[in-house]
Length: 610
Image (cartoon, rainbow, N blue to C red):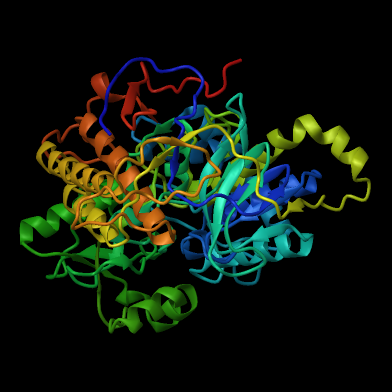
């Protein structure tokens, strides 16, 4: 895959015809909507669609409560407090986004956010309240000039939101398929969305590869943090939604803007996988960033000191560590005292103590780690992508809200607000007939078929990576496209990723041929004698998805020759608005090449042609 073009951009999306190598579907379900993902975005969209009478199926990679939402510690940002306004929230978001936010999208977020939070409370979410009051307790985080972060369980906000939404989904009787990895988008002869293929991992009513047929698909698959060696993301965050969208012909934007959370518990240079997060709320309550000598180094670097936007804090930690020849800095909250740690941050306290560190008596070693993808599948204000019938919300989406760097605790709010907007768009054309056909108000149930669906148009299969290649991708990305990037490091990463792709292609043999979608894909014996194509399976599909999104991220990072937000180029250390205050629109072509179009301004064109 190579970048092959620039310009104002293509017209409506055309499918690439590329699919993951996988067996033919052996079962199918008919529905109106399939929601892929079970975080705040996915479950909110599903509940709203079902309430509108749409036959809704939720597909999730693990259990319903195993997505990224449950790991969110800090809270959800909204202008809920006295003296705070959506305009102030807007201003803080635009500053954090470093000139690339879509102001209309941000305004939508901050004006609809407070009511969306109250509807979430109506669904059953219980937020912490101020002592002796029923008012929601609000804290402050990096980049916010006001206390506007609502939290639950001290530092377990995501877990509480997940609990409330999962209970609501189960109470509503929604059809859910757990332990299922989505594979590819199904489309009809006109290129419109027609459902998804998926693989159920041996648990529940279904097993193996199947299909959910639906004219509307909502991607809410979360992030891609597992593309790096160390991340705050759970193991399921392997970029599956972005990879699926690319293969379906959808546009991807702003993928170079990966936010590295500045304060992740440092567990040593060899630590890999999901790392414990030390919430920004700890700094919001007054903890200080210090070096080994106890010197605060954020004072004087930014007016908000430790509460500067995340990209600024992460860069400061890295610079300070490099200057002193060390791997990490420290977060000092000893002045909180034991009671505050135990009541306000019990989850963080337990995580630190499980690794032999007691924040009550010693500073916490911290370093940045991959945390959040500010970009993703490009959408409009209704969550519509460039593929008709395909929607996206939450971390997998690029709504334009985050720009070059997400403001702390805007992610849960974005998932909530835009999920509701998607459901409204899906329900609107069908509201009358849905009501007429379902007067009881009970969500309509999907229909099930045991016979496999009819084969669709020919496809091109994508060579699979061996499962063990996942670690290689992660190390390549961490070394070449992590917090610090340069032309040299990115070129090295691109070359190494290309090598992995070539090796997979050679091992698979002539799998680029067209074949019916219903045919079992078995690879070829024509590969090198010392390398065998991996069998289709979850680990191979995940590794292949990771390589796909890694190559897109590196291509975009190479193209953006400036430092902006959470994209830091050592060889281009300054922000360059004249050249780069614009977005990339990236698509995958049928020959597996990438096409990169650059917008003329910071504004996105419509995703849907009028």
